[in-house]
Length: 439
Image (cartoon, rainbow, N blue to C red; front, side, top):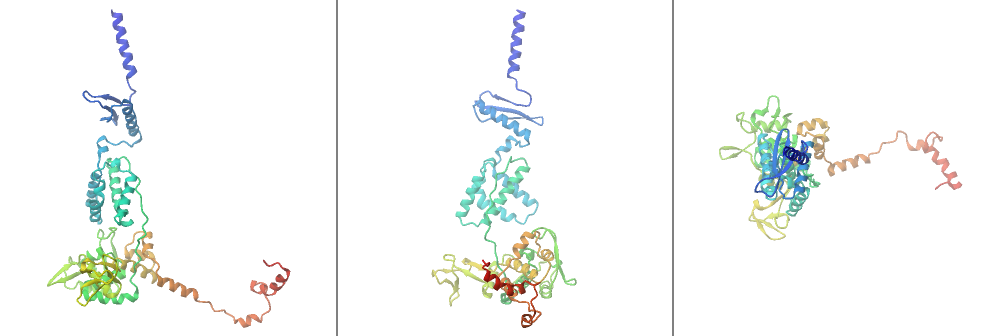
């Protein structure tokens, strides 16, 4: 009897040894009442249990091996994180932008709400593949979105995935496509049009005339000018100072005012307190800060001949009739001024104009970059472009001939000097021609 008991215990031990998995390889099991297999494995001493989502034992084994491989290679993702939705990544992105007071927060939020969210928000992050991104590009192009706009939208989504990887919510990122941007503006304010635009701007108010001059002189961005305060203007030292954190790249800079900029800004800040805005306009007896002035800018550009208003239907230029109503001469449709599209010089084109003018006037490019606030040479070179006037000037320089130091008639009377190839050609050409050696 004892012999049979010992034999039974030995057989049980052998069966347990036969089915026991090696340490570190995890295990699979079935819970009571569940047909699916479950996984159990360890990482850094912590036990993880999750459903394999299948009743097939072999598939469950393969999933377990994949999970163990991820823990060994550092690609492990928490089971809960595998369910991360794209909208959760977007929420983390917006939080990060708010915490760092990024200037592009408004644009990123708008792009997410209007374009990205309807297509991606309810997808699991792990299900976003490159083919889905390419499909998004196709749909946005069908909506007439520019390549630059699509790139900005995908860049925000890519940033969201990157933050998700840092937080352990995403295992890997899909490959984000990047479109070629061929819509880079080439607008300039030519010298001939500057005077007309200056007069038109002055008719709108001192604020616009001064902003135009500062933009043409230093190439500063419109938001940098709108946020400028009186305390940043030092009339005694004739300097303008942009504080760190108020510029696009968050770096401060200081410039010396030109005489005309000095005179205009002195009038702008006269009687104002240090914390008040430099550029303000009158609304009755109240001075208000400058907000969106694109309509005013379009008006002065049209008056100066550097812009025009286009029909929204046929994109043809619209003129006003005797009653001041905007009517398209091509499709005969009438529009309100606010309904027309503007085409012409943008205020940001003054930035390109300033960069080009500084380089043409011999200012070292490094100094010009410091004044305009360009951080990289690649972007600076995009603004320092060549226009037709530059090409004409180059052609004139190529036409200039260096006058000979000796009269050609005197040269013809000299004895041949065979140390110069020009003297060898004459006497040898005839003999070579007669010998038939010329090709």
